[in-house]
Picture 1: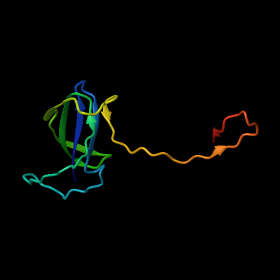
Picture 2: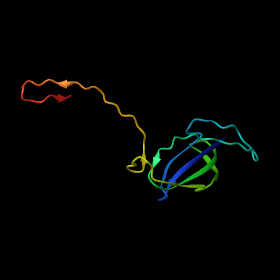
Picture 3: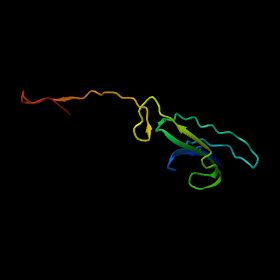
Picture 4: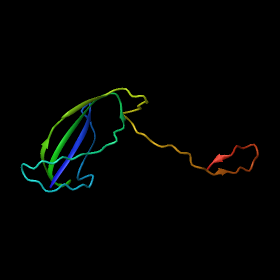
Length: 118
């Protein structure tokens, strides 16, 4: 019952993101010694603060609750994140959509009072 996954780590050694096929509810076919498969994870990585980051792939056998680690390549790939065009506040820039929702204004009894948002 193979599970393929990865962990991403920052320059301080903090694991900040990762996933695997079991968490993504993608069941891999049973494998035996010598089998070779490729698992592709398609990610939209947000802009990270400038610094060094590493990627550690792994494969395990079992389930999320009970597994045996078969192989783990710690810091297999290291990448340097450069400054981007946008500002990164904190550890990463999360692209988002902003919208304004209509609100009801509270009516006031006295004409000298300003309307208030409810």
